[in-house]
Amino acid sequence: MTIDFDDVAAWQYHLPDELIASRPACRRDEARLMVVDRRTQNIRHHDIRDLPHLLRPGDRLVFNDTRVLPARLFGYRTETGGRWEGLFLDQPTPGLWQVTGQTRGRLRPGETLTVHPPHENSERLILTLQEQLDDGSWLMKPDIPGPAVSILETFGTLPLPPYIGRAVADEEDQKRYQTIFAARPGAIAAPTAGLHFTKQLLKCLSARHIRQSRVTLHVGVGTFRPVTAARLSDHVMHAEWCQVDAATAADITATKDSGSQIVAVGTTTVRTLETAARDGCLQPFSGVTDLFIRPGFSFQITDRLLTNFHLPGSTLIVLVAALAGYELIMEAYRVAVAERYRFYSYGDAMLII
Image (cartoon, rainbow, N blue to C red):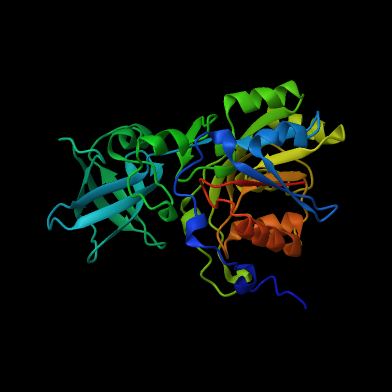
């Protein structure tokens, strides 16, 4: 039977609700690891702690070092008292925020929103609505001057994905919904494949002469938005800012030239690397990407991929299948359900070799 890869229905699978991980494993490196072998078409079962022995000395892991902002905001419409919940997206210019949100009724330019910290205290932030943008988000002016990052530390909370089931991140989330190498604030969702790594695991990888590099992609609001079009070709991919610096590009190129492999940690890392190599070789890059990787894509840099299990019908499962093959990935997901793997952000992982 011929598969229509452009049909979103081809990318669905059945996932029992109880397999969606609402909490992380007790330790970051206790997650299970499914190994999907493209050459043999076999599927094997390991743990994340086995990773140093599943890769070869000389291989290079590439991580996304973005840091998740406390971007979720709670408050009310100042005039009416109606509840409002928002998500900070960007600070396009000093003194202006781009925010998307939801409330009853229609917001209007000039209206103000009163934002309170997630853990109640007397401080308040006033956002004045300036202009509604084409995507439905708003430009808003905060009444507190300064960088958005510092203001959000007081008034925001980590924006957990809706399937986790908690509107406000708790103390455990504050520690675990952030990679240990998160360095550059700007994301509104975690690069979840990186959540499995501990200092000890990184040390073990280094001892095996498995090299490590960092790139940056600030995960954007599109990560929460499912594909709503019936066909992938009609889906508008969200744009996200990413960067590969010159030293990292040189290190990765040298690794490939030596015959060793590049292991991307997460789909965000794949999109960053492949964006920076659109001309056939990896170059330093800083800017936005809307790259949509689908079956038929020619990978220039990515040899292997460590990733979590993704939502049915998402652009991420499509990306994974573009690397591993449709039939193998859909079989891997069927096996994962049968073997009771844990899914999504706090779930288990897959290594495609």
